[in-house]
Image 1 (cartoon, helix red, strand yellow):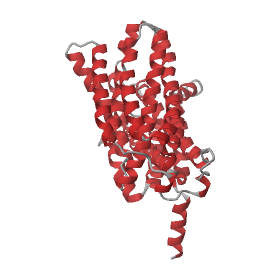
Image 2 (cartoon, helix red, strand yellow; image 1 turned 45 degrees about the vertical axis):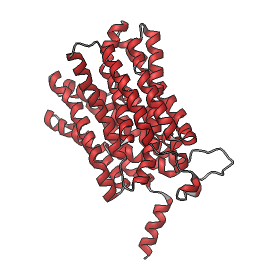
Image 3 (cartoon, one colour; image 1 turned 90 degrees about the horizontal axis):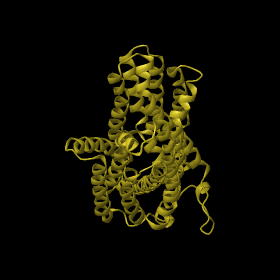
Image 4 (cartoon, one colour; image 1 turned 90 degrees about the vertical axis):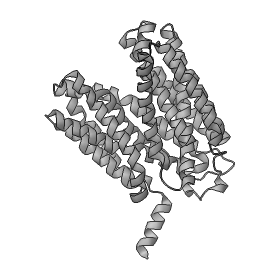
Length: 391
């Protein structure tokens, strides 16, 4: 429950910033183009935070790093609301992105250990509650606006509540990450000598590349789904907005259900068939001339992708539990790059082809992920399968 609390906290703080972007833009007095450039600072800060938090979580333990970064993330949310100019907003976004990235990686590394101790898959449910946090942020913004509070006051309320949640939940976290002596043997190729610095294995980087492809697809859907319905299929703006809502809804539902499928069929099947379903869904979107079939395609795209990223994070953390933080930081960091790059890549392709035809790239990325899903299978898994087949 404490881990769920931190996932909700992370989703709520990020969602609170997103819903208050228009108010902050107006207060600072900048154009959309300037804001777009400043948002890069948020991504840069998050990437740096992810790389810093992973090794620190392995060294100091989640009970230290997760609450600390939770408090800092909550406090840093107030900074964009206090910015008075472009430069101060840039610094505020860099700081908020850094704290959010630290919390993201440290709580995911801790979730890997919780999942292992719990005895059944729960990683997808954790990621679903992150999405729930975004919904709560929207509801909180609507409530504060209806009560006549300013955006700054609404953000301050979330800051205070977030800090309290981070502190109250700290005592229920696992006391420390498992050490190599406490865990099952890891693969020889991934085990480093005790005295030598750890090196990230080729398998972790491969998982990170898959995360980049999947999260690039997620990022592209968030920025281009509504525009696709409006510009390609001629839907009204009010109707087009439901395209992303459909994608996000099925992704959240899929993550709430994915753990049951992981327990029954295994993470490899969830990644492989989920990515394959995503490939079919976005292909329907790209080729469909009808609005309702496009909605169905976005729904299938979100449902298919819903369980993919949690399996990649879980596999990275379980590859070597004593270095879960560092490994998750590599996968999450490269995946975050993909999410930031997705909208830009599709935008660049629209200079060459129509928007719906640019979505064929997403079809290819999902198909590659489905084919490469065997990366989740470890050497020990292969040995067990061979032994079973011989018997």
